[in-house]
Structures are given as C-alpha cells and as structure tokens.
Image (cartoon, rainbow, N blue to C red):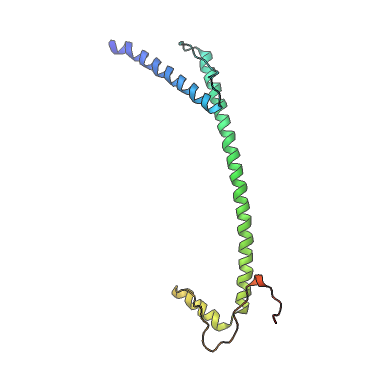
Length: 144
C-alpha cells in the first residue's frame, strides 16, 4: 500500500522538474533572460499547452537555423564543384595537348610505367632529341 502512495508523488515531482528544465532550456535557446512561461504547482491544461507552444516555437527556430546553415553549405559546395569542373576541363585540354606532342616512344614508356606502378622517369630515352613539351598555359606560338 505504501508504494502506491509514493509513486504518484515521485511522478509529479519528475514531471515538475522536467517542465522547469524545459522552460529554462527554451529560455536559453530563445535568448530570454526570464522565462516567459510560469508554472504553478498544479498540472493545469493551460500550462501544458503553453509549454507545447514554446517547444514548437523552439523547434521551428532550430529548423530555420538548420535550413539556413544547409543552404549556405550547399552554395559553398556548388561553387567548389564549379571550380573543380573548370580545373578538370583545363587539365583534360592540357592532357590532350601533351598526348599530341609526345612521341610514340614516350607514350609507350609512359604506358609501361603506368602498368608497373613506377614513378615517371625525368630523363628522356637515348636517341630522342625532341625538346620537352610546353605546358598549355605558356602559349602555343613559335619561340625565337
């Protein structure tokens, strides 16, 4: 019998503490110094509705802040994607130019290096007198 009398009091105390925690949390979240919702010791329906409304307002505020942050991040990522696409296009053009300027022996040597996984050699094979290929960014006109 004694446990039946204690249990509702423990539950009411827990609910009371949870409500006060919720109010203080919402007040800090909403940036108010004093809690705008005051609870009396009774469990009236009006106070529960007021708490529900404050929780809903706080959730809406959090949602709007998250959506704003996500939109900002999406814009940053879109810009990075745009820059990467441009760089990829430039590198593809440079690669195509280098392929056209390379001799068949250089291409064969490069393919062999790719298959063995060894780093590319910096010296030219003996017997080739071709000058090193000019990068695409230095211009394509004749040099004196």
